[in-house]
Length: 263
Ligand SMILES: [Zn+2]
Image (tube, rainbow, N blue to C red; front, side):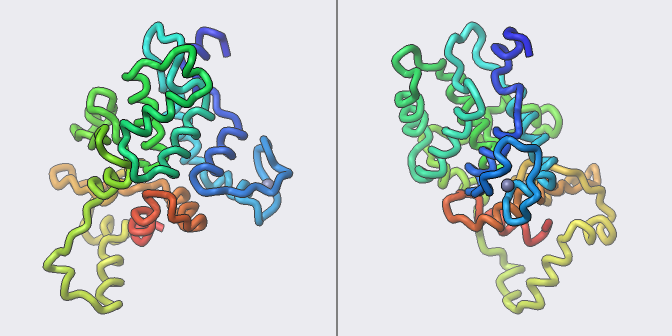
C-alpha cells in the first residue's frame, strides 16, 4: 500500500493478527499459542479454528474500518491502527457505566501521543462511533455520517456524550410488558411465539421478503409497503457471544435475546 493511501485510510489493511486480536477483545478468545498470525488453526479447541465461520463478520469489519478517514490535514488521527480501535473497545467494556465524554477524555489524554497532539474532537467522535458499532453491532453514528440514512431513510440512534454505553444499550433495546404476551407464560406459548417469528415462518406464512441487516436494532423490522422484514444475518457473531458467555459484553443479553430467533 502506498504511503498516501495508508495516510488517508489508516485502517485499510487488516491482517489475520488483527482479526485474532478482535476475537480476543470481543469474546475473550484464548488462542492455543501455535496459530498466532496464521490463516487458520487445526486445533478444534482453539477459537481460531472457528475463524472461517466468521468470514461474513470479518468482511463487515474490514468494510467499516477500511472506510475510516481521519480529519483532513490532521497529523494525529484518532485511530492510527487497529490496536487503537481495540483499545477503545476494551475501555468501553471495562467501564460500561462511565459517560461517553469521560471515556473519550480518558482515552485520548492517556494515549502515548497525548503529549504531542490530541486528535481533532470530530475525529475522536468518529473513532468512538466505530468502536461502539463493532462492539454492539448497532450503528450509533451521527446522521450525517451514516450511509443507512440514504439507503433506508432511517436515522441511527446517536450515543450521546452524557450517556454510558450501558445506558445506551438500554435506550436502544427497551424492554416493556406487552398485554398480549402477559398471559403467555406457558413454555408451549413461548415456543409458539418463537416459531411464528422465525425467519422461515415469516417468509412462508406472511409472504414477506427477507432482507439481511448487520444492525441488531433492525432485526425483525417490518416494512409493510415493501413487504420486507430485516433479519440480522451475523449469526456467527451471536454464537461467539453465547460461547463466550461473558457478562462484560454490554450486548450479551441482547445477543442472547435475538439469538433465540436467528440462531
Ligand atoms: Zn490455534
